[in-house]
Image 1 (cartoon, helix red, strand yellow):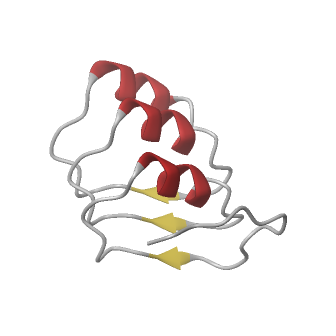
Image 2 (image 1 turned 135 degrees about the vertical axis):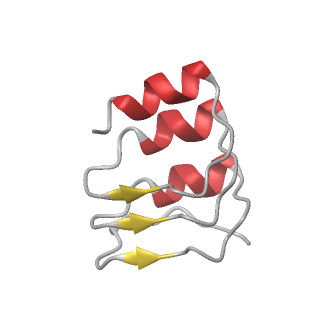
Length: 80
């Protein structure tokens, strides 16, 4: 999947539960999404990805995660 830099923000809830892996660049792009973001298919998330998602300003679902480093957990706790 190729993601380009867009100046507009995406509007509407994104249900991407079928995705099981995302690059840090893809996670950073999605973190700029304006509304809810559902990534329940992800089973792991890097520290950089967690840091990006900690800046997401709306609801965030990550119920599929099976492992998370302490640094990633700390970063995500900022999003709550």
